[in-house]
Length: 294
Figure 1 (cartoon, rainbow, N blue to C red):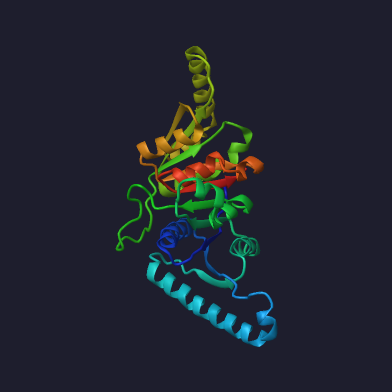
Figure 2: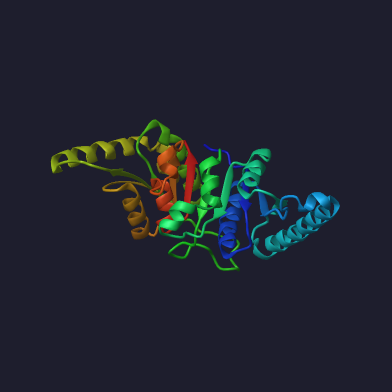
């Protein structure tokens, strides 16, 4: 089973950061993990100007970091509902680079980030910090958007997030095993119902479809360990069509709280306008997505 001993939650103090922090502290509480809160300030340094006044630049930077550290402390105090006490980091520079650098230096096992869930051609072409972290992170990344149905609890509930239904998307390959470990671990932690989904594409005829479906169902059933069945409810499902469309549709129909997907090394197509399955599910879907490198 995967070890989640440290979690990083970068925040920008927006509504989307608050949503992400709810999930980050919930996971930290369940796994008894160290939680890191980070805010990255964009550098003020224009070319050449501060070379004349380096002391003034350093003083301004120190003050900005101190202000943000205080803001992070206030953010944590206002939004933390568990006994978890996050360690705060205020830095200035390249946002993506500093997130990945902190994740590496602190041996982070999971990054939890808010995403605006913007849609359309501009979103696919321009990307975001979350997209860039997803492309380069060595550990799983949980991209949190405001779910279509109610998941976060009331302010009086000590459990920030209730995850009751999880969806693991699998291609039945050997590479998918790593993502399934995270799915099973989280389903056990939250007592959630876990559905394993495989989407078939380009099946020519009804006879071939029935044969292919039966084969995949058998593979999925055989992949479930007896201990997993004892610990949580596990279902299997096979659909046909475009993977991202079927994943999004099922997640919405079933009121899924979390989608778990494996993501392989990315090529040129993944950074092009059309993106990949996982990016489309994050952009267009109805709930948070855990992307697990495989």
